[in-house]
Length: 389
Image (cartoon, rainbow, N blue to C red; front, side, top):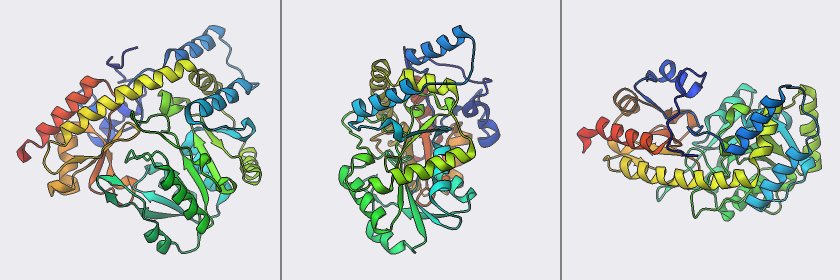
């Protein structure tokens, strides 16, 4: 498989390409879609083979006997992350936005505060507010070009009605891989304020060479309040499968979550289960190693090119494929730099304010695309801001 292959996704019910003109005014015929967090690559052959076997069989009934599926998840977490998972602790949700919603529903009450370390993945705030809970935004400071944690400030900010913290680890949109010490500090904060800690680790496989992700489940003394969320969807570019895992080892928390799952009658689709079972394998692992190396070079090219534009800085990625670019140094208004990107460079990107406090001067660019697309995007950006050179 070549990650350099251009795959035309226009007109295929692809939200990333077929909705960008309506949402951003960027034509798919002239522009580049760099907003939705999915890759422009085909999944590994093992996933395609699993789907082909389903097609060859030709009967698409209810899925039974999840032992191979659960075993694949446990194998992956132990072999890739050093984390031993009890298969009985695994719940399958309709993706991890649904998983977040289920956690909010199961462990909080209307009016409760749910803490987010912002800027952070925009869907968190959306589902929290939709559930009638209050989003409590703890803004992260930037130190030496990276997001950091400021618990002294956040301790003072707590009002006592907060019952949950949703952590993004690794961080989206900043790309931080949190250190063990930082994760221990997050755990201590959750304990101080008696918060359920939901750790969304959907990007945990997509780390840059030389970086190492630590699952929150490996941090001592937090199991009685910890909910882990993982998925194969970002790792293997199968987001349309809408399958994610909520993993809860604490019996009391697990029982509470199981009650809400049962009450809502949720169950996964068989296509997603077959895909995940195939992906979490040695063949899938080799593909992930290759895609991470490719993404690292994309990040190098993108950052070097973008950082030549005066006043513009792309935050160095430790993980994910989502470049977080700050335009504050240009002195431009948000409307002006956004217009230059969308109307000048013809690139559709995510707007910073949707990620919460700290995002106003930023845009998020998806660099999980063929190398030629990244080079084109850099050239377009340099041209759109050429008067600053």
